Image 1 (tube, rainbow, N blue to C red):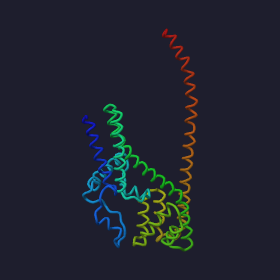
Image 2 (image 1 turned 60 degrees about the vertical axis):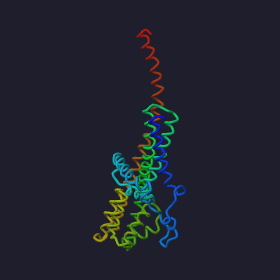
Image 3 (image 1 turned 30 degrees about the vertical axis):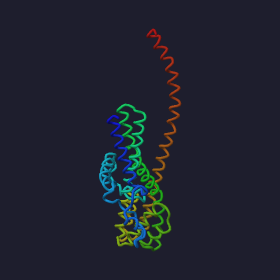
Length: 298
C-alpha cells in the first residue's frame, strides 16, 4: 500500500468517525439529553457536548468556511445570510451539514481515486475537488435562495406599501397598520412584517424594528420604504408619501422585468447564430482546404 492510499484511508476513517458521531443510533446520548424531552421546559435540541468531535472541529471549520466565502466575494456572515433566505436552520447546523457533505465528497473522491488509479494530479483533483464542490454547492443553494426571496419581496412590496398607505389614510397608526397586514397577509413581506410587529410588541421602537428589517433583507426598495415609514411622527401626509413610494417601487420592478425579458430575448439568438455559422464555416472550409492543397502540391 502506497503512502497516498494510506493517507486517503486515514482521512476516510476520520470522516466516517465524525459523520457517525452525529447519528443518534450510533453514539450513546448522555442521561441529561435523554431526559430533556420530559423536563418542564419541554424538548429542545441539545448542543454538541464539548467532548464530541463536532464541538471541537466546528469552530475551525466555521472559520475556514467564512474565509472561503469572503474569498468568493460574500462579505456577510452566515447568520445574516440564513435570515435573509428565511431558512429555519442555525449556523452551527448549516456548517455541520456542509461538513457532512464535504466528507461524503471526500469519501467518493477517495473511492474513485482508489478504483481508477489515475495520475497524481487527477487523483488530487478527485480527492480535493469533490469535497470543495459539495461545500460550495451548499453555499450556492443558499445564495440562490436569498436571490429568489429578494425577488419575491421586490414583487410583493408595492402591494404592501399601497395597503399601508390606505390604512394610514383611513386613520390607522403605523403599528396597527403593520399588524393588520402581517396578520392577514401571506408571503415573504407579510412574514417579515410579523417579525417587525413582534419586535415592536417586545419593546423596540417602530424605527428600530423597521431598520432591522431593512438590514436583514438588504433590498434597496425596502430601505427606501423604511425611510419613508420612519417619518410617521413628523409627516402629516404619510399616506401620500407611501403611495408615491409604492409607485416608484412598481416602476423599478417593471423596469427590471423589461430588462430580464430583453436579456432572454437576446439569448434566443445564440442557438440561431450557431446553427447559421457552423454550416457556413463548413462550406467555406472545403474550398479553402482544396485551394491550400493545390498551393502546397499535396
